[in-house]
Image 1 (spheres, rainbow, N blue to C red):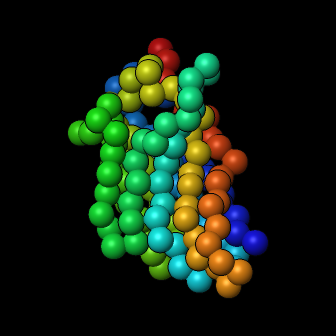
Image 2 (cartoon, helix red, strand yellow):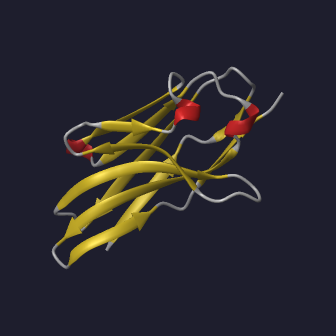
Amino acid sequence: QVQLVESGGGLVQPGGSLRLSCAASGSIFNINYMGWYRQAPGKQRELVAAVTSGGSTNLVDSVKGRFTISRDNAKNTVYLQMNSLKPEDTAVYYCYAAVSTILGARDCWGQGTQVTVSS
């Protein structure tokens, strides 16, 4: 059993910043890939940013230069630093982790955290 617990969402004005955190716990052997997805009302869930266990990162074009993804392997935690936020960043943000457990590979999702960018 693996749990992902997210924190850090909220309401922020345009141009503001937020930092999301996601901590994984449970029967974890290794976490190969961690990322953040988001889903706005009426839209499909989309990948925002991802980071491998080796530290390689990938960000969607719309957030490049504004968002940074990082992870602390020792804490099984991934972070998403979001700067210069825009109203179009408003969405529920979900943490994702591709986890190796003693029972095999698992795709794990957090419960989601709301990010609202509005004046």
